[in-house]
Image (cartoon, rainbow, N blue to C red; front, side, top):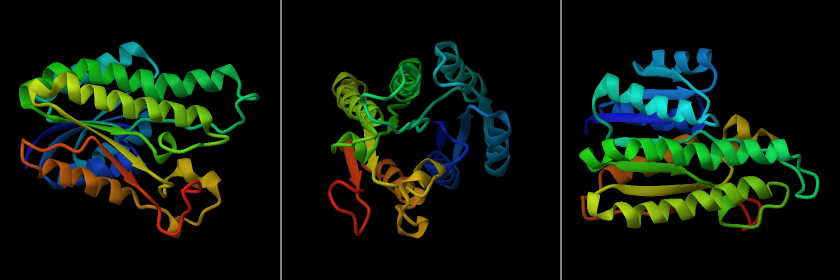
Amino acid sequence: MSGAALVTGGSSGIGLAIARMLRDEGFELTLVSRRPERVEAAAAELGAAAVPANMADAEDCARVVAEHRERFGRLDVLVNSAGIGIGGKVEELPAKSLDIQLGVNLRGLFLVTQAAIPLLRESRGWIVNLASIAGTLPTPWLATYGATKAAVIALTRSLNEELDADGIRAIALCPGFVDTPMAEWSGIEPAEMIRPEDCAEVVRMCLRLSPNARIPQVVIERMGSSSVQS
């Protein structure tokens, strides 16, 4: 395989694992992350372009796609991996914590995708949206995070319907607890968590499908977990 891919949240965790897989498959890469030092380090490792940006900022969302287009001229895979989860009961969660999760997890994802669609139409490419198993199950103390991820799942399905005639395909990845810094609060031992590379393997599988097949959603459960504690 070959082409060009843009990965938000590409400096660590699931985004970095997917980016590494895409590099191994021959894709040229743009990595996006909020902290310049982290995204530049990851880009140096993978031979990728680094774009520091805040996915809660509308201008940054448009800029990352524009910079990718200027550098590579094409986009075959968009990976929306940037995300944030802030715990707290619904009755106690500050409005600021609500806004930042909506801003990054949903609004930023929407705006980057919106800007990328013209390029993806040319390549008949893939949109990979990082949702969560929290978007499919009750998630007390992560209600806002779960709500944003449920919205991502709904958006992904709508994208597939809207863009079907253009040959663009979208998938929502919905993993349980993955061994990343975001999941450290869970108390689950890292060795018992899903690996970031597991998510990358699902994306690799999608890229190998024929043009006549798509997978709109994949739930990745953690072995040994109950339906609630995932």
